Image (cartoon, rainbow, N blue to C red; front, side):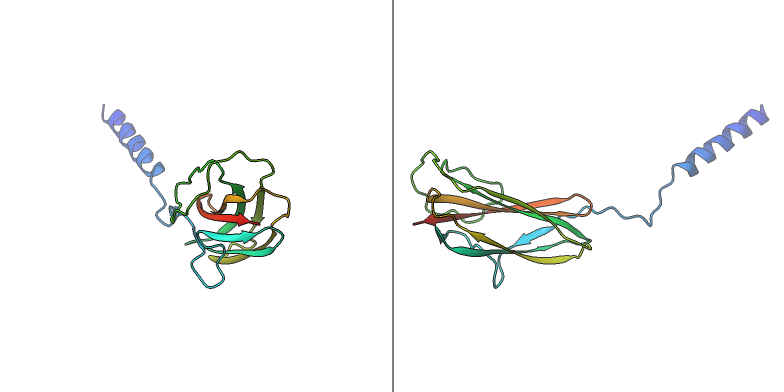
Amino acid sequence: MKRILSILGTLALLATTACSSDDSTTIDEEKPTISVNFTGGFPQACESLKRGETYTFSAKVTDNDALAAYSINLHHNFDHHTHDDQGATCDLSPIKSPVNPMLIVENYTIEEGPKEHTFSIEVTIPEDIDVGDYHCGYSVTDQTGWQSRTSIDLKIIE
């Protein structure tokens, strides 16, 4: 009986030590951030952009550990949809159906995983696209897969 209790005790001790955690490993639980609220951040909420002109879209992204990628998504808002994090609400034109809306979706990698990165993307607004309400969506992903997004209302005019 003592032998069985000794074996059970040893097994219990092995099970306990086998399941112990390594406290030196930390898990990244913090999402990266995106901001256009700095000198050169573009576009700002409710900004009007002219067809045929070129603009430098720019945002600052940060993370507590390491950044991996960012993207830009320019799309129409003719149906007045919203996004989770939209700050300012702009005066919207009447709802309409798109005929030739602008759509830009581009993804970029951030090399070497810095904690902060400011990106600039040149965008020429085509002459033949529908004017009206648009969204500029930015997203950023860190090296562990956390992602943040922001969306900015803007107008494209003649």
